Image (cartoon, rainbow, N blue to C red):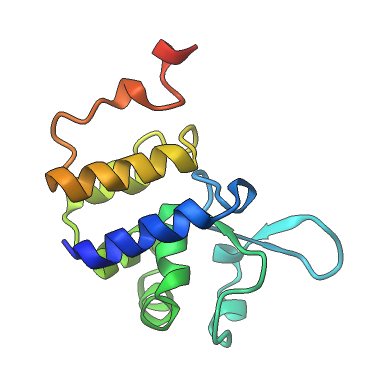
Length: 142
């Protein structure tokens, strides 16, 4: 596990406006013709020529890993088209951590949940004994 990169990711997410984070989508970018968003992951031809992520890009945890380390992630992404696998390699995490960090409750969790997961991971090295019921999506919080 690359603790320095995980800490850097936490710092970036803490400064990120809430509207630029979406746990349910890897990448969303503004369309040039209107204010709607499109999923960049469906437009491989568009990312192969980009030197950096498009301005205003919205993403999940894996998406932000790929945006922060764009030079490493772009070629990996074009090879395997799996954002979570690319982010897994960049952060040097195992399959269980990959699932818990990028996929578990991904459509329901928010940026605060992501930051809390990352901080827990840094402290404990895994998600064993992580209290999923403390997250914003939990039925316990309704």
